Length: 272
Image (tube, rainbow, N blue to C red):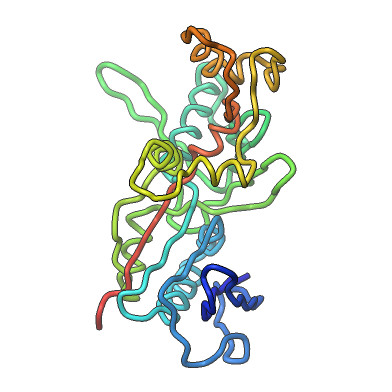
């Protein structure tokens, strides 16, 4: 689905929004979008990685994005952090190795917590072993395209996704006049720094409250700490305060692990 914000009439009251349903990793037919209309911003949230099943799909979606942008327009996206996926997958693999499981017997690599899980099938990776004078280590390798894994998020999604390597994305995007504005930014780090920032006239905590994005917690009623391990960060913080009667908004450890798995991207359409 492509969401376009078009023609703001009065920013204090409303904007007109048109919805067009299309597979953006395929050619967008002229009857789907108005011809000749260019945009200042294209936003692709939690979806770009689905196009990296093949190089043809990846190129097509980037071509579509570029063709819709005006010069100096921006493309922004949120995708899973490939390096974080690899790090967690390697940790899961090492647990198999520690249990002396034969590499040929490893049919999948799975990691997660009660909220989410990521499962790489055997067809999506290869295992190699490196030996030095000091250590014997195993290494995971994934293909550039079609590195499929199944992503499960409790109550939200359960479907296949594909790894997106930032250097590969940069290289492909450059072919369509899209240059990175900044290196990928950790979603979790940006979340934290934004909350602490006072550069915006609007307090970001107000937005979080309106979205009900955080869990309410008050020590007096011990909610939502049904599992103290999930909220030990908050308990430790509150125990360090003289006045521990305050209410807080928080995320569980499991929710934070999901949040920290994503990266923010931004590209600019260069002048031709």
